[in-house]
Length: 137
Image 1 (spheres, rainbow, N blue to C red):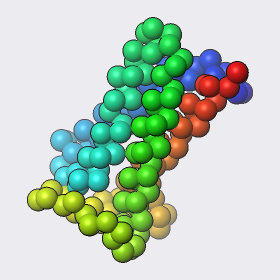
Image 2 (cartoon, rainbow, N blue to C red):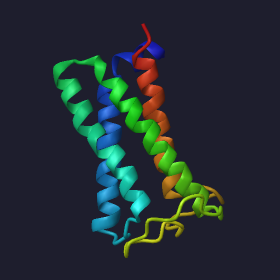
Image 3 (tube, one colour):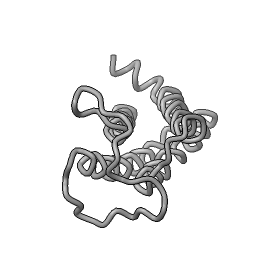
Image 4 (tube, one colour):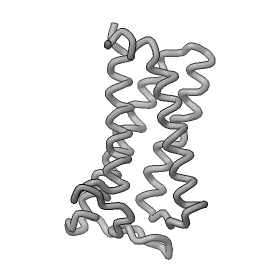
């Protein structure tokens, strides 16, 4: 199983980040969810991964994973912090709300814990694990 994941890591990572990027745009542009500042930071760490993995797939460059892992770790930190806020935690840092969406507002709340930021953290964790598998010798 690890061999199969390692072989298909770049295309799999590309399609996962492409799908997630498209869904973030659909939720904000079609369904009207207004992304907060923390959501935008998560997007900043997500969107470049589509381009990086697309180029790496085309060039067959497995060295892209160090960048994908770095972006994923940073994105996961932001996502987990926002999830903490949405679950009722007190602000450790001030919410950079500047007339956009509220960082603590839950648009989705399934099973009493699943929120948009938790979904983003799961995506970033998956990319991190996929990168570690791809880097195995």
